[in-house]
Length: 371
Image 1 (cartoon, rainbow, N blue to C red):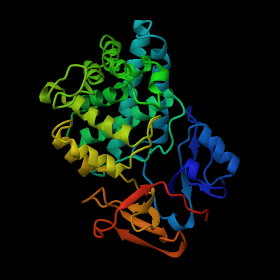
Image 2 (tube, rainbow, N blue to C red):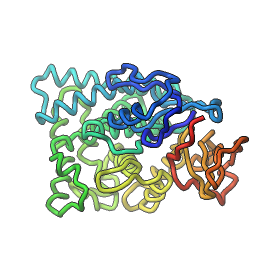
Image 3 (cartoon, rainbow, N blue to C red):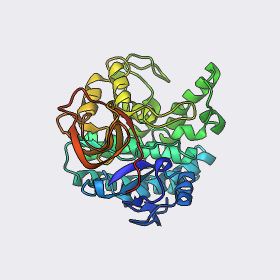
Image 4 (cartoon, helix red, strand yellow):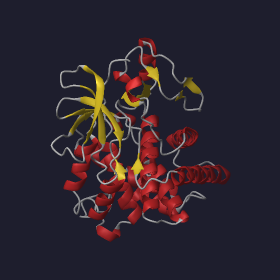
């Protein structure tokens, strides 16, 4: 099985895992053969990538960090929060606020349970969006879920208590909630922001803090994360130019993870940055913008190229990530399916990038011909 951006899929390919609606209903079933109209419809709906099954990769098993049911639950809850806070800066009643807080806690229990079941000593994430989210709602939800999975699993690997995992997880889910109150036109702008527009964008941290700080059942640390996730350890962040340990540890984590997620997903004003290039940017700014120890842990524990991802190598060969190398997660083993001339190989072979150090992953999302 492999992961291919929907826009690069071709008629005749077969679905390797069902496609679900936001409500958890099956939209396209397992092993359904794709048609051009289906591909176009799925792309328009904002289904950014598909699991594709074929003979050359049938032994490659893609393990999700959280269950489809958990992801659906998170998506529904975040959409509810988005719609509610999009109309007001607070819940209209104490009961409503308590209900949302209770649902956040229940959802985080699910996330922690799923991530605890995965005993691997690493973080893997397969929701690489290869096309822009079709709405601010979808963008808000995708970013929140991705950041939550990273933060919670990394917290586990650091030995955080159950209470701390709940706090950092909920903080990750709602860290960007203040952006809901900003102008959609401003958030979708494809041109360079003026100083006044950038100042308006910066307000989302304080807006988010005030949204959350008095809501019953929402941890105060979640409000703190919303306020501080754009602070940077050298004092160059906002809103208060805090430095080093003046920034809460959870906020420093979410700031790093939010930056990585933002870089590896497209925006109206730029294309997505390849995962390894985003990691290089984090390292270039370690010790100034980001805590160097956190960047190192991220590098050592996050599989930036998930199993099943279609890639193009620096040699021009094209293939699929077939396994992780736990000693160097940024250099997985790749099963080569096409040579440098684009010809499909009758006998695929594998290259262990942890040994073949002269070969790099140049790009992700290469479409293969249907098998």
